[in-house]
Image 1 (cartoon, rainbow, N blue to C red):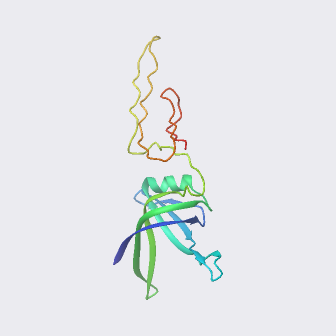
Image 2: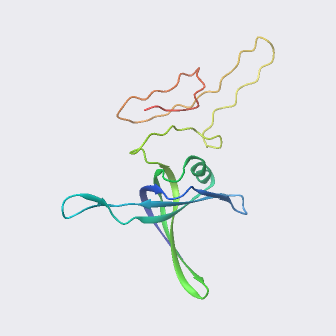
Image 3: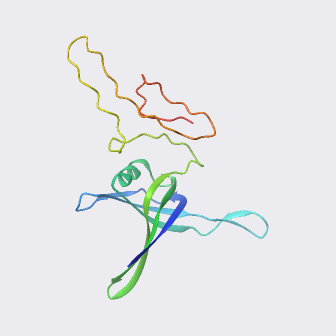
Length: 169
């Protein structure tokens, strides 16, 4: 029996993500995230509390992208479902918990990131048309437009540049 609870956490990766591929061909990444709570002492100073360690599982493209993009020490945010499982091992009843991630991303409070769309994403540019002959002009695929709501200006590359969907803040 398992119970699933929606959860969002922000913490640091304790180790590099471990990527594996199951027998069915589905990619699975295991991450371990430490979350430190800040505690105010009696004298008014702030200190790190006891860390809580979470096991995080990601599957398919999310697993591949997390393993490629993240490394030990990176600040991350994770949204998903907290899953509690009970099982028997050596005749003893045990319990385990993990977060099954829906999304994982860098925590931008502590740094910057450049987004790059992967080739296996759901939204792709149409394939360029092939034309024969000397006078055939090269045809560039259309770059998808993004709606981004930010406090500051956003600079998008011109259509003629091959910038690869990067957004600068």
